[in-house]
Image (cartoon, rainbow, N blue to C red; front, side):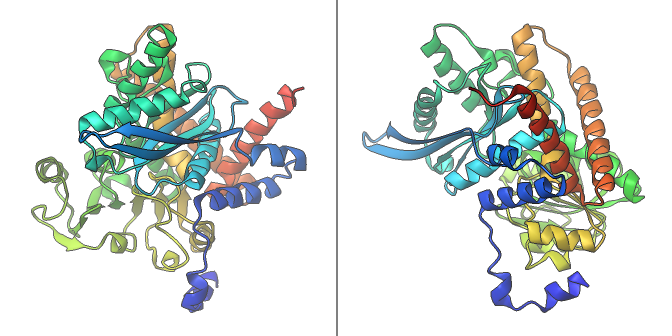
Length: 430
């Protein structure tokens, strides 16, 4: 069996697994493109980013010194509409990571069938070490530098890791000031009083909840009795915990960047959320015992939600994953080799490009509302999101069954077909 083969592999082979995000994205694309017989010329077009910008961002710090930060904006595809993708501020951001995330955004938008292509941005920094004034200066400098290639009909940024509605407001203001008129549609994830959408903050987690519900139906799991482990307790992880607990699911373990907690009988989610707000971490929450963040991945449970960073489930630990469903709220938490192991063991992986597509879906709703200058209430947003996510899951599952493939390959085949068809019909200009 594959599982036995993986277990027997020497450590030297295991550690040789390629964890570069862009090469993983390319490998996932190539595998699906081969399976669906994509034309070689189209394959070359779709596997490369349309535009990739690398920036040096000088910023005057509070002490009067000048510090230069590295920044990136990558536009993978605009064949189905304007580019769309978040901006992350993190000390470990790399150009390859941003290129991978931009490609994943293209497939994500195609899967939920919204008229966007993929983009992504990032700045190499630790925002926790910057004052609010320095953070604003850095954001506005970055916004000014990318302003020629963004816009409501070109490329619409959004929040991502360590960025929020305030960051988006600064970007919108900078772009608007340099273009001579207010342009709320240039970004999404804004405060509601500046043209943001109700339901946007919860959208990623709510969308993940909708597809988990559909996956449970396919796998014969009763969600109201399911056990859930969540690695990552930021926006997506914490809200997913709240939504699943309301449904009756038992949240047995969660973790954040400082550590994890466990209670086989179930954590008290409202109490846990209050503790997180009060202390900034889930660590030492009442009625829990400590657990390592990596150990959470290997707990016996019905549903595992990796909601942290990339490359968390690899060849090294794939044979120890015991969940029946892995719902990827984070981007790229499972490597291609680990995917194969999980599939052979009968574990359903709901891939990131489907599981966390609720965020970009409601970003699309926000963009539409901004352009129309007509805004929807939260119930309307959530109803529309549910329809989109349930249909996307159904489409991906049907494609996976048709091609006798895992869910990730099914998702890629569906997305590639939609993007390739648009490219083929539009043609290659000139």
